[in-house]
Length: 253
Figure: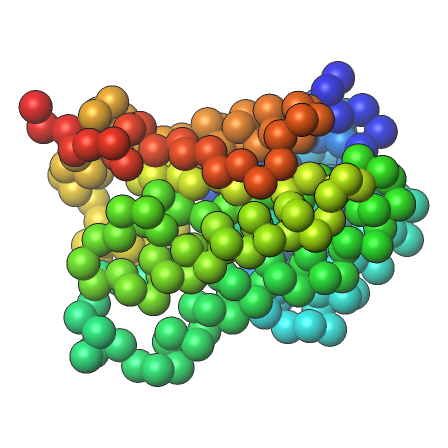
């Protein structure tokens, strides 16, 4: 198993990409600390891991709250004795909205979750990660940070900040810890409803058709990319797009 004896802290693990990653990492031998604001959802993720013979612990965490993050990392270290992997997935979407109609408080909330959250997690995990000598931080950004849609200034800029933060931390934390970024495109997760009002089967097909590969990214696609980055010891400061080709061009040929 590729992650035998590793300990992985994964935020947002109640659903979507983070849940798929938690399941895969556990299957590959990692002990997973699955964190999410939704306590019932993250407990369901842990139950699924345990029913398949894996090891996992659930934690209710608000990544934008410093004390909550400190408690999460302390729980991981106390329960499993170390932290090898930190995967920052928890995030907030944004409906496409003209800037004049966006409340300042909403922008602050998006920044608190999407930028401050990964920053706090890195801040309070780094000492444990460095102890292992080969620690890993993975951050979820978005292809929207490179190719933003109109009306998504708050979300797109928050993910642009993650790109820069990841590169800066890759330099700061080397050589003991590697830091890499995954940039998903349209992904078949519950969060999609937070980007497109009235999201339904027809709009699903429309989004798919707008990518060169004509397919939604699946949570498992992101999970396997994360696994690859965890197991290749010579990659740091990288930004990997998993976007069905959206960055390089539109579909509907």
